[in-house]
Length: 198
Length: 198
Image (cartoon, rainbow over all chains, first blue to last red; front, side, top):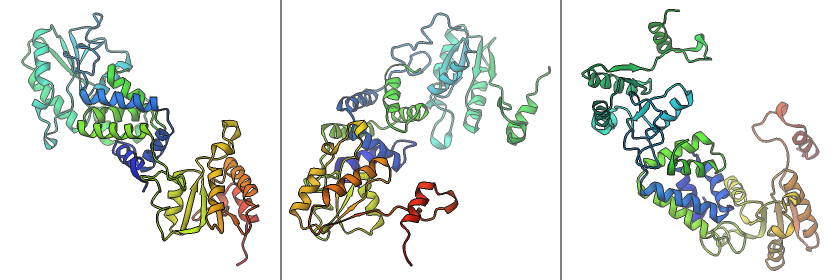
C-alpha cells in the first residue's frame, strides 16, 4: 500500500500481537514524526532483548541481576513458594499484597499438543529448591484452565513424596464483585464444591 | 514493576500511540519469546526510519524513489490534483478507485495554535506545480474539521488568481450507510445546504 521503508515498518509492527493494520499505520506515522532519539531508545532496548534477557537463578522470573528483587529480599519467607506459569503472574500475586513468600516461575504450563512437557518447564529446579531450602508449603498458582490444572495435578504428584511439605492450590470460585446469575457452570460448580463453613 | 530490560521495553512500547500498559506488557513478552531474527528486522526498519524516510519530490507522499509510484505513472491525469493533508489520506482516496489524477500531500493542516502556518505546509510547492504543469482542477480533500476547513479556505484564496483553474472541495453530507436520525446537526446542516436536484 505504501512504498519503501514506511510499508516495511507497518508490516513489522503489524506482526506484533494485538496490533492490527490500522494501529500499525498509526504507530508508523507517529514514529516517522518522532524525535530520532526516541526511535534510537526503542532500537537499543530491542537490541538488549535480542541479546537475551536475564532470569533470576532462583525463581526464574525476569531479573536485572543474578537474583531478582524478591529472591534477594531477606524479609521474604523462604519456607513458602508460590508456583506460577509466567513472570506476569508474579506481578498479579504481588499486587494482592497478601503473599510474603517467594515465587517459582515455570515458564508455561504442560501442553503436550504444543510440545510442552515437564522437561520444558522449570520443574526440576523447583524440586531442587524444595530439597535444599527448608520449604514448608508450596502454593500452586497455575491458571485455572485445562493446561494449568494439568500442570497442578502433575506437580502434586511430584511433590507428595517430600516429607512434611504442604501442597495447596489457589481457591476456585465466584470472582468478587461478580454476579451469581452470570457465572458459568464450571465456576459455580467449583464454588459449590469448595464452599466453606461460616 | 518488572526489572531491567523487560521494564525498559514495556516503557518504550507504552509510549507509542494506542498502546496501553497491558498491550505493552503483552508485546514485550511476545518479543522475549520471539526469534532474534524477527527482532533484528524490526530494529533494522526502525534504523531506516531514523535515518529519514524519502518523500516524493513531486507530491510529497512517502516514496521509495525520488518520485512515488503515482507520480511516475504515465496513465495518471496530470491536469488533476487532489490536495490532502497526510499520506494516509492518499490511500483513502485511492481505495475509492474513482480518482485518476495525482496528489499533493500538504503534510498537515493549518493550526496556528500548534505553530502550523502556511510555511509549515507544502503550499509553495503546490503553487509551483500549478504554475508549471497544465493543471485544470484542484480538488481540496483536507479533513472536514476546523483545521481542514481553514486550510481549504486559505487554499481557495491562494488559487483564485490562476486563470482557468477550477478549485473544488469534497462534498460534505450524510455518510453512506448512516442513519439520518443519528447524524449530528453540523453534518445534517451541510447535507441540507448541499442538497442536489434529482
